[in-house]
Length: 98
Image (cartoon, rainbow, N blue to C red; front, side, top):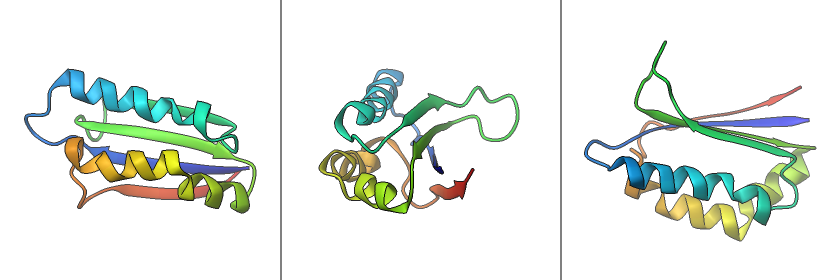
């Protein structure tokens, strides 16, 4: 299994409702991309580390499924609007095998 981890900093002055709408759109990727086995998206609680971020964790079976997810129309649509809510110069992106 491959786990894709994405962390984005929320832009200043973005409303909580816009952040929540984006989080819901990210969660809905599971309904649009069959390769996604599991997805978790949420706003940081701020207990340790960054407190103004959104994290997304996506599990897929293998690299082919990861490539299909990344290149999917649904992911491309989310990516194209990320700059409306997130600072795009400091994304943290990683994939691990587990």
